[in-house]
Length: 93
Image (cartoon, rainbow, N blue to C red; front, side, top):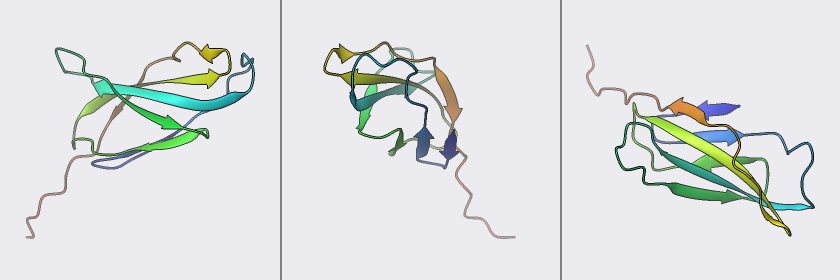
């Protein structure tokens, strides 16, 4: 589930069915979909939700989430493709 704004996206997800131990945090990896050289950014969260800020309006992003336990990082989940909202123009008619 996600809540989309112009410059931020709030993500939430389910815990893995069979975690490899106690989950201590999640890592969210994301990049601009139409970027030639994928420059990843990451956000960490101790719960099953996170807000990703400083995004560009009207831009498609790809997000992937993985869990971290004492056994190390799990594999990234499926790609989530989300487009931020366009910026409202300042024109008043």
